[in-house]
Image: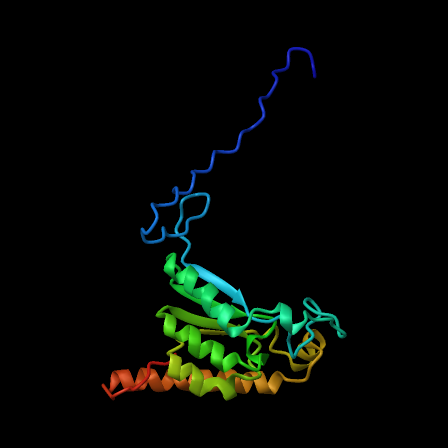
Length: 196
């Protein structure tokens, strides 16, 4: 240390507020909070590690996936998400892998759609047309469709799959649904199911 220099005291990180203590037995569950006392209302749920793409930033071409016995079942997902909803979670996002490749994906969406929360998902878009009716039935309001590039050749290089046109068709399908909903709302037409 140079002569006459001042010793700097180490910077201290601010203390994090403590989460509330558990309530008495029989009391309603306390809401979830993070270490900064912010309410946790949004939960991402990975329903599978499998995917029909092999994006270079995510998976190798030859993947070894979890045994199906190690993946949460429909009943387990329902129990887990219900517990979080009881603790104040109001938005659930289904992810993967690719969530729609699960054989019971429709059952999962229908079951979790009964929890009374904002249900949404992130998908590569390939299977969206097969799930449109399910989305409408549950009233899903938002969907994230992954599209890494607007260049078909680069898309093939990134995903190792040749599905660019299929994904664009899925996006067009979703846009058509949005246009219809806006038109129906403007003209005061009856809409049996809200869908965006």
